[in-house]
Image (tube, rainbow, N blue to C red; front, side, top):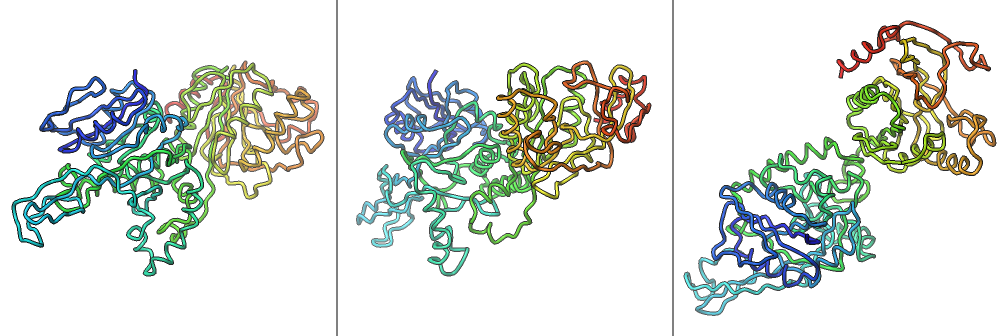
Length: 562
């Protein structure tokens, strides 16, 4: 099992053998090559080598599908996708493997590959711009005697570390051609953005918004976590934008590693372009799909929206001229001890999935579950464990506003319509009915509970960090309470205040045998009668319908709505 598989999707590529040779001669680790011959056989053929696997398709499947196939075939820890016309640094593989955290996508520093020149055999005229064979020498008028001389070396002055994509999702470079459209005075335009490049250039490994798709490297398992290459884009096009957006918006990081490099042969001239048919049509299709997916925030794997990525790399040419209202993002931290009837757990999660599309969900559980971004904390059931779960969830979420949600609360969509007007106040939705699972008895009274808490993420983080630290030192007592903002310091954790809101329709707090807190359905069970204002016992819950003596049917009715 090799450490690295270099995947090369190839179609009508004359330099495939040279690229393979360059990889194998410069690799210093256990590296293999997987080349997908997409609808063609090289002539002459590829040399036999135990480190080279060839996968042939009689009919082309496209660059995206070919890349996915190579990744599925690989058994290596890491994969690298490379174009079939590239040159590589000595030891590129071990240098990339040495600096690649699990959620990183890494691109090496990029040079232009000077692969070949055309030479007029009659007068010696040399064309250094790579492209199709000349039709006529502009010196001696020769029309048929030209030699393709292989150069195969890097153009040291043609180096690129940093790229971005514009509002049309086109890859751009921080050079004169890439910046010219943003002002007549190119020096003034370059000066406007030069500090950004200086910031990026301080270290050997630095953030990069995007690459060009010709060469990228990451953990193989991470590639499949991101969904591989989305074949709905079509055969090819927008691969670099897709990978960058998936990496950044999922909470990962894309970097350029300037400790190593690759050189890429650009296809820039008519007659020397993409080997796939209808290149303009294919690009337009891919870009249309890409713009809908990313600019409309439709990718389900995201922790951030596209505005977050633009803000991270701002100022960016083209983007900073677009005035966008600043909106707060919302997310859910779901914490569970996994100790509840499976039917209740499933209904609650499915309800949350159906009503919270677009909100980031981080779940923290005692055992693994398939719900949002799941984090496992194996610890005995206790108030401290609950506080740690909430803290871990808050540290793992990136949303501005966070709702704390529990595994046995059926939430109405209107619960999440609320937006806190202040960042220094804890807000509780008091429109919650308790329903006893044993017989469906419903109960309402005004109360603030953690399952109805919503607040600014930074405020919650500050509170729960202090709460966990204090409970670890002193232990937990009901004197300090569960609910942030309901007790001031020193009894409580801090001096921030709590306020209430009422959603349009109520949530349902299912009371069952495994609740962390006791279920009390009689007034005399409460020492402080002021804590149960609005006490109402009922057979049904507003909006939801009858629950008394039909709890199972009630749950089935919710299932039918999903």
